Amino acid sequence: MSFGFYKTSSEIQEEHEKLFVFMNPPRVTVDDTSCSETTLIKVHSANRQGSLLEVARVLVELKLVIKRAYICSDGEWFMDVFYVVDQEGNKISDRGFECVLAERILKSLEEGELHRRPASVDVQGAGKLTSIELVGLDRPGLLSEISAVLTDLQCNIVAADLQTHNSKVASVIHVTDAATGGPVAESDRLSKIRLLLGSVLRGSARTTSAGSSTPTSDERRMLQLMLHDDGGSSGIEGDPEPSPVTVTVEDYVGKEFTVVNVRCKNLPDLIFHTVCTLTHMQFVVFHGAVVAEGPEAHQEYYIRKENGIPFISEEERIQLANCLEAAIERGDTKGMRLELCCDDRPGLLSDVTRVFRENGLSVLRAQALTRGTRAMNYFYVVDASGNAVGASRAVDAARREIGLAFLHVRDVAGSRWSTESVAKAKAEEGGAVKEECTVKSIVKGSLLQLFTCVSSGMRAARNMLRM
Image (cartoon, rainbow, N blue to C red; front, side, top):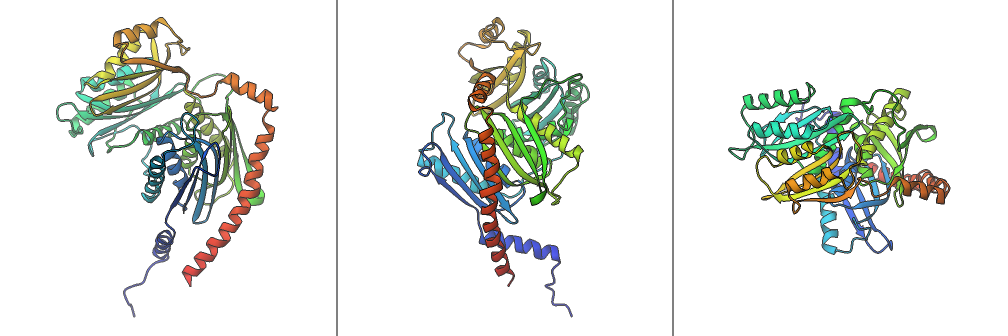
């Protein structure tokens, strides 16, 4: 006899997860009183793969700097704690901003899993924009050639993001049809864009359509493209230079985890780049601690594969270490930062990058945004040989040609901490061994004890639900 309400085990599990989330909605607490120097952010939520990355993404988008972080997750629940300051190193004192921060994190968690697309270079005409993804070998003047091709094809560049690392380049570009202001919809035009950009990148490009996205999701996508393209390898023949990033990957047999330790310069968005790499490589972070209060940052993560396997092979260890090193090094952008703010017009990016190329400047990193009728772009540039340009004649000539009132020099190098300051701090701290031990003791001690209590509580709650 059938009553018509039989459900499979997977359907029952899905219903159980929905009920668990409904009974335990995400909670965000922003506390600016507990700590004298930083604002404390606590995030409690049902655990989903990618939740940690979503929280880190929101903090990056809101230009917050993470000084310390403690990450705890077990089974169906996670609790993350972040100590943050603003770009000037101050606590958050604006109550309105605190509300916006909490709402953004809640919205990000409630939207569900990360949107994943296969890594490649594509062009699509869905939504309001046509999105183009590019991966290939870098060379001086490449961005100028790409933007010139798109301008010739009557494509208006609305937003663009480009990163280079060693000999590789990845870029995400959003364009509209110059004639209609909408996406490029004709299949023959999309095929022509794909063909010509593939020629510029010497056969290493592809094209696909997509809807709108944010600069941070573009940055995440470029990291995925880089990882997919080279698996974390340097792309340079011969003996590579010593990496400024130290990554160790070890087994923690007693607790059935793989432990990842990262030591490097304290860079902007460091946690985002690290967690994004781990997520893309299908690892789940169960516990972690981050200390980034000086010129050097320490990160420690206890991870497993998405399928629950706690340990990985030696080959996977090497690949994970290489990918983390490459991702963090890309965040340490070298070169002189030039900022362009002016009225937007068709062909603007093509004209600006052509001026750079004609004056012997090579773009290492670039982001172009359009806000209403204004274009807001930044570029990190070096000379054609990859050397720092300083206050050179080439930069002065480029500024005069583009307009001194529009193109400004902001800073040199992309890091808040110089190599010299790192060396000095190490000497003063005796190698910072004490702080490294502190990170380990936090994770192996209090965090694991905390999660033992949390796990017991969550198991009790789940048992009640099954009764």
